Length: 181
Image (cartoon, rainbow, N blue to C red):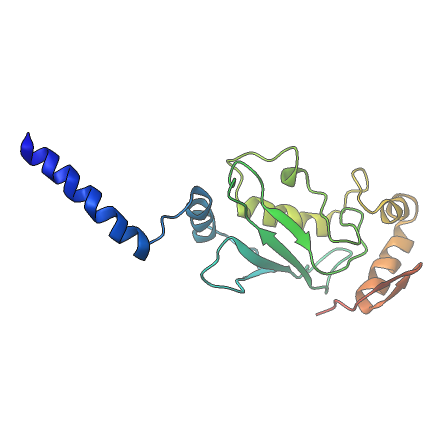
C-alpha cells in the first residue's frame, strides 16, 4: 500500500515539469486533426494553412469547373472554435462574389453552418456544402436578396451578372474584383 502512495506522489511531482514542455490538445484540436486526416477533397478544392502549427485556422480555395461560377477562384476562411465539433466553424468568403447565398461582407448562408449543424458533421461536409452552393445557388434562402431575385426572375441576366462580376466590374453600384483563374 505504501508503494502505491509513493507512485502517486511521484506522478504528481512529474506533471508540472511535463506541462511546461507539452501542451495538452483540446477536444477541438483532436477532432479537427481527425477531420483533416480523413479529408477527401474534390479536385476543385484545395486547402492552405497559413500557420502549419495552427489547424484551427485555415483557408479553402474553390475553383468550380461547371455551372455559373466555372473558371472562378473563391477563397474561404475557416475559424474552428473551442466548441467544435458541438459548434460549427466560422466560415467567411474572402472573395467578393455575386451570389444569392453569400452576402457582400462574405457571410455564407449554408444550413449546416447554422441550425442544421450536428457534431457528426465534419469539415468535409462543409466543403461539399460550399462547393454545392456554386453548382446550385439557392434563391429560396438568400443573403444577397437582389442576386436571388434576379436568379428567380431572369436566369440569363443572372448568368451575365455573375460573369461580369468574376471578370471584375460593377453590378449596380457594387464593384467586384476579378476572381477568374
